[in-house]
Image (tube, rainbow, N blue to C red; front, top):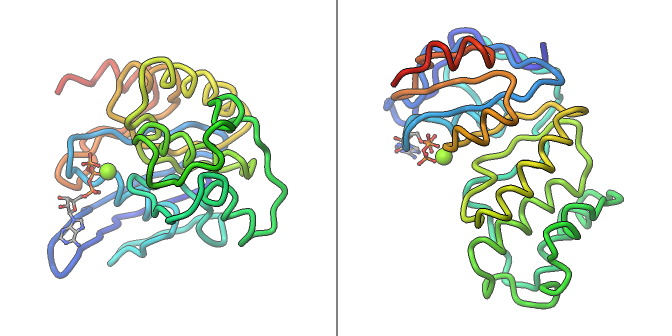
Length: 208
Ligand SMILES: Nc1ncnc2c1ncn2[C@@H]1O[C@H](COP(=O)(O)OP(=O)(O)OP(=O)(O)O)[C@@H](O)[C@H]1O
Ligand SMILES: [Mg+2]
């Protein structure tokens, strides 16, 4: 067990966003959170990474505090690509691993202003930035958003390698990618878990 949730509720000014969440996130596994727009995926991911606190229920995690994660709408600094890419390195004083930055071919964009990039280019910078830390836990909110098919394939292949040594928790809409990477699947509807199971059972039961 890495993260354990029992009867978790999360509400914003009395509006229930997550309800009755019972969940065990396993260390070393890849957990995929799926569901329609507004079902609560990003909220659950932020809650699992302790960015937000549940309104009630039991929560335990063996991570002492949030780790840098890939947000659905990352904050963009009005500086160069390389500045945005290395900002967390400056804050955390980490050594960084540039493998993803290089694989996504981002070097040629280094001196361009971040806000002049295409959406897909920005997304690649943000993914590469998270991957540059070599964290053993990855929290990724729709990592494939805005990516072209080729880049999405590269992302999938890179994640298939990462998953062997890491705990990954991610949200996704794409079932094909989910099937390639996932070990455990959660399907949210209106803030509730409709179905959660391992690969075989999830796709056997899944029919909505
Ligand atoms: N500050 C807020 N006030 C009221 N409702 C909110 C607030 N923040 C989020 N919500 C609601 O919480 C619900 C869950 O949002 P969330 O971003 O977790 O959905 P999601 O499943 O990630 O959707 P998407 O697929 O579009 O990314 C949505 O209905 C959203 O409108
Ligand atoms: Mg979301």
